[in-house]
Length: 323
Image (cartoon, rainbow, N blue to C red):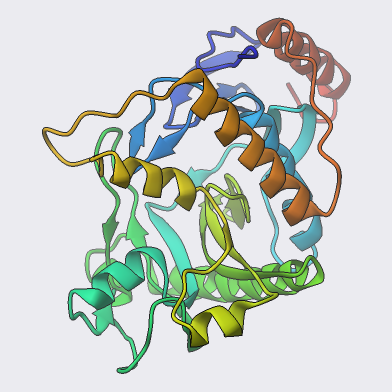
């Protein structure tokens, strides 16, 4: 197995704090700048797997960067620079405590709820008579509350978000508008690659100036589900599973091995051979989503590579970013 980066312990100039999420580690610097490191950790069912996946952090970071560049004309985002394959640097924001989930198809969590007989998800009605992976008449927004570390995100309706004061009505209308615009653009980008953007989630924050911007990742296989467009209708007519690009294959493997993140369950062992197949699948995802050949970064000493690249970038930008 190749080297992976599963945890970091950097000390950058002007560093004020560090936040370690499920997959990313975020260093807050003076001047309202964040350094976000995409690790090779793999999370499923809100549980971090015990071993890293080679190149996964690079893949997620580079897809997110490309997608932010491809949507920056319609929705502002936090990004300032990507000095390293695993690193994004951007504006510090106060994140909204909701994830904006948008679904174009009855898949994943929505399909599981539908099979239980539910016809309303996050306050949004779902039509009767749908099969798993059918397309909704129009995309539906099904928000989730952001969980504290170790807890599961939870479905929540627009009405509850406003009633509980989690987001103001004025801000929420902006989040909805941005979510629909990003999903439309993502759908168009996917179509150019022969893919269907099935569902995804977006996270937003406010800059110190009060501007709402897109943060975190966008249209990656960790945050999104894609189907191959070719053969989609035929598979639906035959009621066969769709050929998809997402980390759903990891979730299915875990389910088959008796794990869904529930209390008392143990994460099954991931052999080196299995981890290698997961890495290869992520590379396949990258190439299909971006339409470009994946170029593996030097992983001889990932920590030193990241440290050096970030320090060089901060040095070059210290006047521009007021560091």
